Length: 193
Image 1: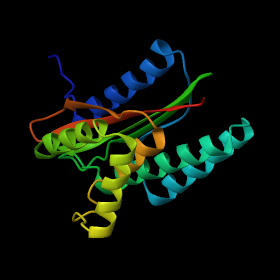
Image 2: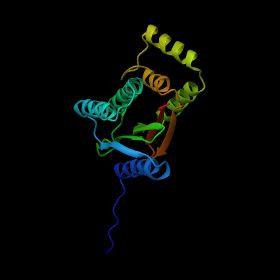
Image 3: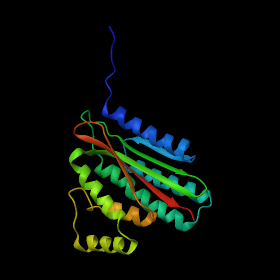
Image 4: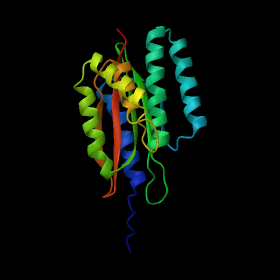
């Protein structure tokens, strides 16, 4: 009798993480210097932040680039920790990759999200990508001054921060991993120049 292994949402999510890693390393010829797949505790988020900062300083990166990357890193890691969903088995499938080459840093954050949130997030990011820097800053200030918060946080301020600090468009992808869940990932580019 042949036994078939059941492919879980965690397996599918890990496969997406591996594809992202391969894309950065093989297609873009970048050096992936920090990555993680799995659970994101606050201690882990703090550790990543400290390690990336040390790596950037030891590489002699400009202080302005360090600050931009650090801001994006904190927003993305906290988004995964606070907003990431669990699968039916209770598995947590967040991921994070940071890579560099001579001209850019690329960061990819990923986590599970409920299917009903996909269109809202997709439209929000599309709207942010269509705004110029001045309108982005104004949008950020309006959200801050109105104090509009979601049940879990800050009504999308993290994406605005990532877009402003990266000075590039956010590139989201959505992979259906079940009827109820998508694996949402976002690619952020920070130019060194």
